[in-house]
Length: 390
Length: 64
Image (cartoon, each protein chain N blue to C red):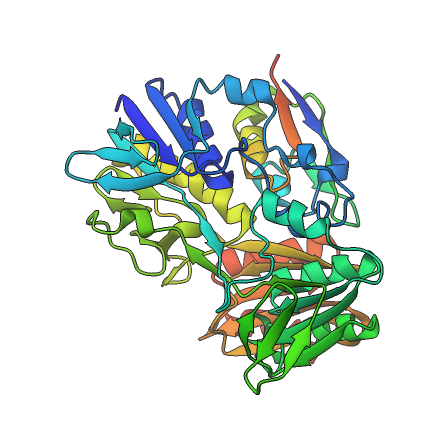
């Protein structure tokens, strides 16, 4: 391999590029990103950056000299627009064509919008800077979607003195992800602070200063934030021959086609640890998966399946929520340590006969790591049931 | 080698401890602490792994 191309210049793409170099690849290395910024970190966008605790320069993932040391052919501000699998060429928006021997697709996701197309979204640095300029004491922010992103933004806006209304279609926010009990507990954090949370309401149209609900009611706002999930950036791969279906479809080795791997938010792969296909939009997964894809691309003869325990965290008000594993589609949730009401607990998740996830709030790191180990070692639910307090 | 840790950037994920538990630990709040600022060469690979997986880009390896 003499020409490696990584499409996507954020956490996953950067990790892939760094890993290729670290593991001895010394050919041409092209890193393509549609945003104009050097690789930056996204989790702080809805936390420290939105709160103005940090400025944009703190989000830079690597110092300029660390990037320079990678000896990249760096194409920022240039979207990839097409892929010719047979000819092994990536086409770019500026008309150029980049040939490759090995390709890593890490084009991530973009924010979903709703009919009407108005309001803010929160995915990029520009999005976050635009929203924070409009937040402040007395402003009324309506957040559509009380998922993790919407909840984090609501918490920051509340801290900045804004009046906040959260609109959520589900009866209990996040119940599909973390279960009803934990979802209710997280909801209470909003209510305790006077943040208005309206559940069971569907937004049908979004303008810049108001949203319309399914029953015709119009909720007015100074600013609207749409936080209703994301869409994988795969349009540029249409007609390429790559399998695309809610992400780039890969095998357990992250390979999508010969010499083509995918990593990060855009990759849908079979995770052998859980025996299921998944696409994970977590910051830590982006880095781990970028590294794994790069290693498998570089050494196909020694390639390894990518079988991580996913991890995510969320900062809401004074709570840090941390979760390991694959919580979606769980069969049972049990509080196994601490107490929900005290906002200091571990909830364990069962899928089939195994413990497949754990979510903690306010617990010491050593406790959380033990649960990670149980999930990684495929511990049975019965083995851990002894710890159960409820 | 020398390891630098910006603790105020740390998000308490504990990924560095999973990658290199001889070099990193976490305090009671989960914030990463360095057990060895200049770990031996035998830890080079695991420290590099920790740098790469840190979700806050809070660890830097200054090679000497």
